[in-house]
Length: 97
Image (cartoon, rainbow, N blue to C red; front, side, top):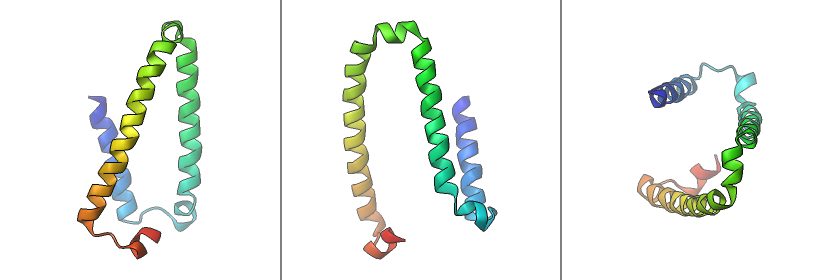
């Protein structure tokens, strides 16, 4: 059920961005705001992992599995973007914008 909340929030943000309802002063700083929020999210996740003794005990085993999953996620994400971008006919000029 939470996934619906996440999708609704993303959709609302996309709608607001598409309709250009965000003031220019804020829209110029979206990248910085996004970066700070990402750092905060990573910090909170680290705190949660650090307080869970079971995860810390299993960390060596989980770490290897996470490494394998991360590598495959990165590889297939890159491949997916390359395949999709070929079908979307994105020119080099549009990529720079």
